[in-house]
Length: 135
Image (cartoon, rainbow, N blue to C red; front, side, top):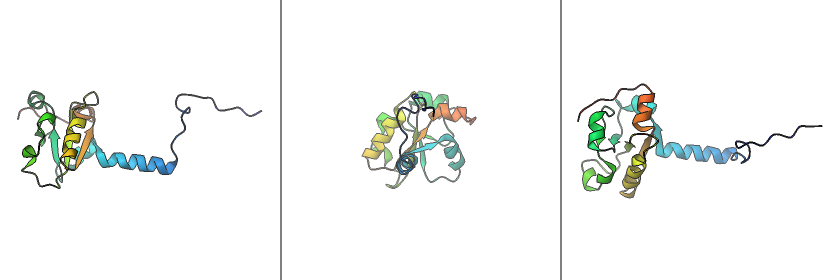
């Protein structure tokens, strides 16, 4: 007699059809990037890296080349020096922090292209990349 597959929290809800999964994961890459990709792309540029934490946290350690603009201070005026099509990549402390999401919402509401660096500072450190101190 054939054995029925066991039920588990993993298998209880069926996986998406492959076409739907492809669309979902492709869409994620349109709004997210990771620490490794940011690190590999810093020299070639093509984006502005925004550290959206407080100035105090920024001074204690940030990604080299990042600009500090706390998410609550993102405004059209604060972005004036950047052409309209500039891609912004935002990060905060890490997965436990929603500052990058708040920043992404503000940027998108100002019609600015934006991606979130998933992992934030925590992910950056986990990858073994250094932070720099100071302004």
